[in-house]
Image (cartoon, rainbow over all chains, first blue to last red; front, side):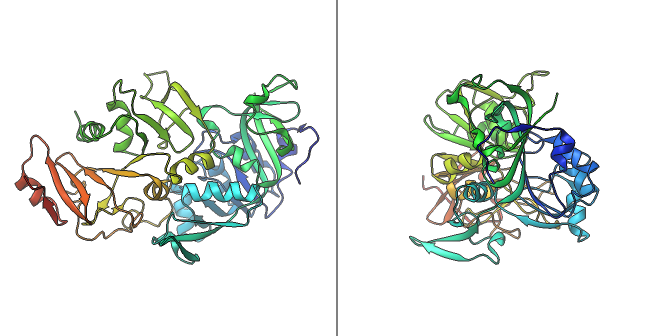
Length: 222
Length: 211
């Protein structure tokens, strides 16, 4: 559950140990940009972090980030918008080792936003009438078909931010922001990998993107 | 100039000052470099940025600054960054005026197929469907023929459609088609090509603009 106390600074190993077998995890990033690679790769050293459902735009690249978890058979299901760039994912899917749920990128990010905003589901025109509409409830609004999309939530969110203060307020870096602020709202436990932790007050309140009430733990990586 | 850059340059000529433009992956990305110093056209990228500038010089790439194709970009003065859900709210909400998309096939009604590849499992869609549904104006930027020399403009797409909503304009290296009254209208033949070449290499029915 979200906490209102200060985020605690923990080690990569302590963070990785918080991902249990069968967990649903959200992982920020667009490709490797804004992806908490150190945190994700540390999961490899924790055998319990397996049978995972991963909600992330991509599943990394072969040999990098989530791609390494996939190669080790840790990921059972991937929910995202673009897996084609990882040939290992294509192969794992073909061999029945990886279940895939493909969502348009905007529908996916909105489903995460909804999950963090207490909205159970929403209707969206994107993908209506296409192959991705199969199995989804369709309803017309003003004569335009819309699909029902359920919100997404996770047990743990693994984020990448540029800087945190000691409370856990986060700022991001350029386009490395992407899915991270949305995912910060939509998981029971939120862990952010950051480059720098600064004293409380050192971040201009106007510049805070993710307020600290959403962040449980920080992991500092050099 | 490569064919791809030529198409991008031709597309840039169709953009009007005041438009907020999203560039899809592939040829559309090259439009950023064809805009020169046109300050009236503002570029948005769906991974969360408004105010995209041209590609950086060699050795000047910032690993935290990429476009939707994960290629390095620059930020112009006045640029801003935002989350993915905000970015797509801009797109679906009609705040991005123009979407420029690549295409694998385009049918006789101007509908685009650009997300599922022949003979491959469907494992990627990205933002193409959101852009096609959300943008007020859609420009398809594509080579006239596939790598195998087959027409990309076909009566019916063999590949799955990205949306029911058609493009408004189709720009290739050889021709420009406007989508009007549910069909393609040839509005321009590019220098170096003629109407006979376009007719011979277009498998979709099209009308010709009345002189």
